[in-house]
Image (cartoon, rainbow, N blue to C red; front, side, top):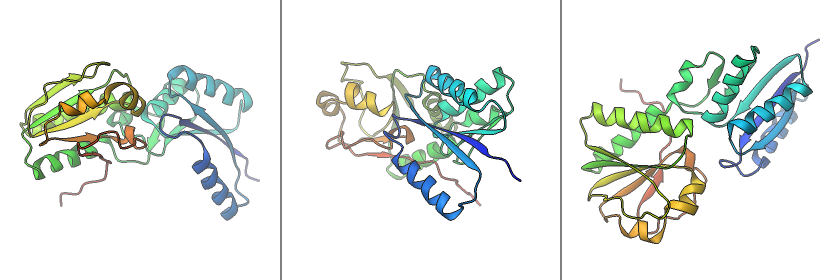
Length: 243
């Protein structure tokens, strides 16, 4: 007789405000496979390392043995879980359904089902070429988010490979002028809450030349239309085949 598999579902509330869509998926799965042995514990967190550790402490106290796995949706939580298991010498797999950082390849006990950031950046630069832009201007938020750090490095790498000019500015609360030049692809690397509440202001938008557009990342999938007349879109990583 097969044994239960205990699943900790850890969701960052900055990406998904509640668990409703996950509850629907689990319900559909249970209807289709009523004899499955999966037991779910669901957690909403702020995505911090401290909260992830507390969730894992709670999960392991509840299920100190048996088959266990952790499922999350962000690179940060995936990595924090992996590090927790390595530190505590636990043979538990950390799985993500949409983590995109290229750094995941360095984790021995973690997998993701989403293409890496380099593919989103490649798509971003295809758009740059299509619209014949002249400069890449990265605006980076005050965050230590692992996924955003990786996106910054991948953007620098791609610009260097293509021999394109790139400027990196750091977003600051209360600052509106970042000396953005005409025909710039503006790459904003910041969390949605910070963009909405700290950085994107009417004064900020007025300083952007009309010949520019804004590129966002999967960290901003829930962002609302806060950019006024400035074109802005989210780039998703997709596999790119050159053959």
